[in-house]
Image (cartoon, rainbow, N blue to C red; front, side, top):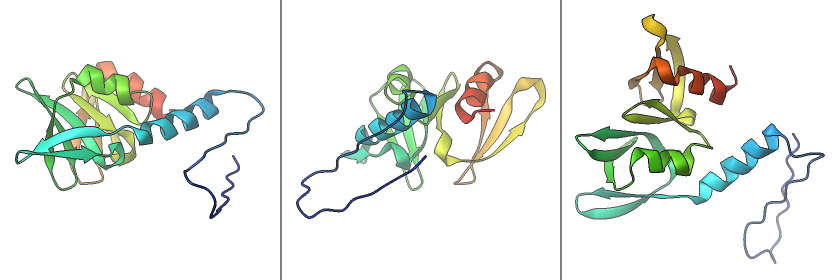
Length: 145
């Protein structure tokens, strides 16, 4: 893949042009990643609403019928259900790890196989998370294993 950047003072907004011989899986992944950058999540913390970038979110979790987005510094309550988060970000770097969690692939540091077909992942913040047996194949597909 070749990346070329042209800076211009008369350019008002960011423009991305993708040139390819054919639309293939690699091109689709690049486009999906670019599109996911535009999406933001609204999170509530201390009565204030915050705009969260997907790249700042380590994972989403559902606890007692409430949903949360975990970042490096804080935990935000989000109004989106996990299936809605999957619909928004599942084609990018997020994947379902358990019935109650969706992880950000970009935040995974290590992957360790465990008994029973499960996998343990360590995130950049040092937190260990389990990927349930039924979702391991999705993880392998996302990372190209």
